[in-house]
Image 1: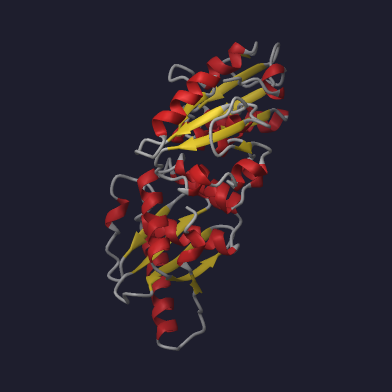
Image 2 (image 1 turned 90 degrees about the horizontal axis):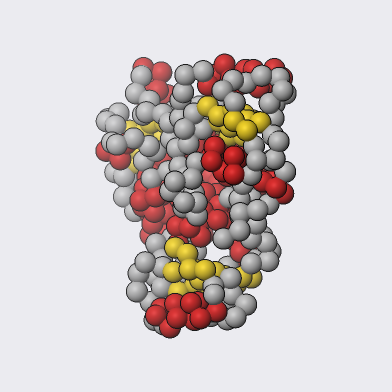
Length: 340
């Protein structure tokens, strides 16, 4: 796979500092690769401190001693900061005009990618979608599950020299082709799949596909808060919150923490609320991604302030249910999520 792109080919002679480990790593890189090794491979030199004469500051999502000071110095000197998502975009493989074929059963990709060469994520970035492997096919995306014709397509890929990649590698390729500032709902879902607990995201999407939900929501530049209520069971409702700093929480009407918060990370109810807002265009996909990405380094917020916010949301919901105030929900439609 060719990784060369304009950014990488111009790194020779540049200098960079790196603070903070990355929370995720694209599957298309070798396991032994690191941000530092990739920069050095193309001629960049690593330094220990941020000074006025370096070119880049690479920032991982995880904490590291000196990280905050490094950011202050970079901002002071006008040094380009490459956060985790920006680094992945800058160093993305150059796959414009590449052609892809798909075979097998997939976890996240729609079944139609195997039989209908119209996958919009590919077409939107200038790639081609082949229904079957041909001499012009560059990549065969191989699902882990069984699929009719899987062995035959693998043989064709080997015959014609097409590179065989996994679903995870493909999703990482797609996720990093667009800058974080240019996400739509579909690319948001792809990026989230490799940013947070993939099983929770899958459960949230499955919930949205199987049933309709009433989302009572409020949001500003600091918080997203709301009630996720099932339209088929009035007892299934949760109060959720996410802040711009990545703090999150979710609880039942009795203020009991959601079981899905165990182990860290946003639960399926929070994700249902966020996905519903993004799909409806209430909050832009870029903002949501940044907030969710920040949540990957945070623990569940269970202090008094968070409990008060969740309780206030419940009180407002109860008032709306009793007709005491006007707080109308957004209704989700299962058909809107069938492609995911």
